[in-house]
Amino acid sequence: MFDDAIVLDLGGVHVRVWGVGPTHTGGDTVFYVEEDKVLFAGDVVMPVFVAANGQSSSLAKWLADLDEFDKLSPMKVIPAHGRMGGLELIRRQREYLAAVQSGVAAAKSEGKSLEATTKQLAEPIVAKFPDLAPGGGGPATGRVTAAIQAAYREAK
Image (cartoon, rainbow, N blue to C red; front, top):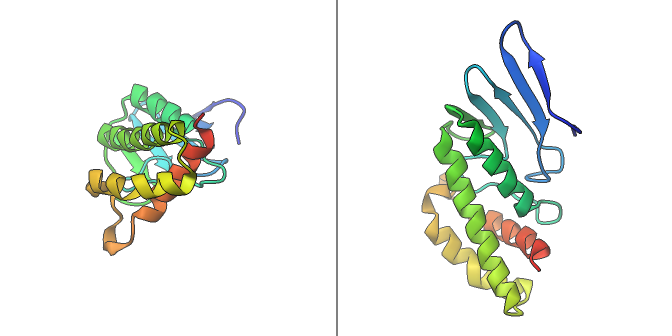
């Protein structure tokens, strides 16, 4: 973990390194090559449903990090897994996580349990974001369920 961002000067190429999270894990670290506008996002931004750890992830922090990444306007976003992309990867993850966060907040404010909230939201969220389903036919609901757990823990 980093207390502050550091900038490495690699002979005229500057790489900003900073810790984010807790997102996927408490120790997620990202790298931004300033001159090339390339963000190495690791597991924080991916072209599929990101893997939230329901016990330690913070969707509020994750969304704030995505906002920060968006402001960088990277030309390329390099995830830990899957195809690289651009701002569309950041914005699609934000849309997905915001949908989870708002859906969970509404369900919890109605007094629904985590189990009832998960049952109500998991499948509709998977259906709303079919482009984020993992390749190879793997189930997407596990990752969505973990995000719902993280959001439920944070919701008031």
